[in-house]
Length: 317
Ligand SMILES: Cc1cc2nc3c(=O)[nH]c(=O)nc-3n(C[C@H](O)[C@H](O)[C@H](O)COP(=O)(O)O)c2cc1C
Image 1 (cartoon, rainbow, N blue to C red):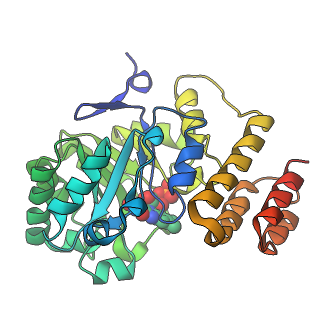
Image 2 (cartoon, rainbow, N blue to C red; image 1 turned 120 degrees about the vertical axis):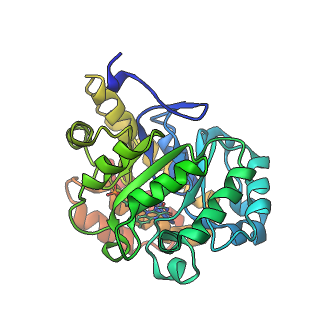
């Protein structure tokens, strides 16, 4: 069977090669629900949560909508504290995988000793990985980058495999590069050569042609889609279809219904606080559309949900 027709296996999970990546405060529960209107099978990641926050947060805030599975719940940690309780809370709800983030470059995360700073402290990382593995009976994945201050993706990937991690997502940049600049996919090839667990690339995979080129140059097993899915919750399905030679373009009416549904979900999930979230997503939906500037300006002026629905109606005219 051809590479593109085969599913990706992570432990006992069999999923399409295109995964819905985490974008904090953007690929939230409403966004994941809208993605499911187009694509039922892809593995979707939740956004990063510190294990201490998972334990201390009201349970409703970490609730997983079971209809949006398969879900990979992402956490980060600064030490082995809270890992046991956080995993128990998440597993009790029903998730398909648990991910440890050791790639986040944000200064508040790094300063708390979590995210990408863990790649710079192998001893601490080793104990955290082992603690997660002991607590996670389902697939356990790690999302990392090329390195923290120094490039050490290969050392970290080997450690992850030795600690029983089931798959790696690798973002090919150092912490100081955050998410900017051209991704250097050489690191994906060198990690892929070293480990036998699946390696998934994250960074700059915005269309099928790029995915194909990266596969040919690295042998990578899967593609985590980040910013390109914003304003295009159908993209994972579209990429999957293109990879097996089918063209897919969502019908205009389907897109319009999805945008209305997205706004309704944001309203019921966040209440009034969701207006800012809704405005951001309207901006993303306007990518490559006519009158984008005008609609975005109107969205910025909204002060209530009725205004948001008026703006969406004008988008559909
Ligand atoms: C606004 C923003 C929020 C992000 N939040 C997360 C997160 O919560 N967890 C995570 O592992 N990565 C996070 N990332 C990284 C993305 O998952 C992805 O690795 C990165 O954007 C590169 O992929 P892309 O070029 O396809 O966007 C975030 C990136 C951005 C730009």
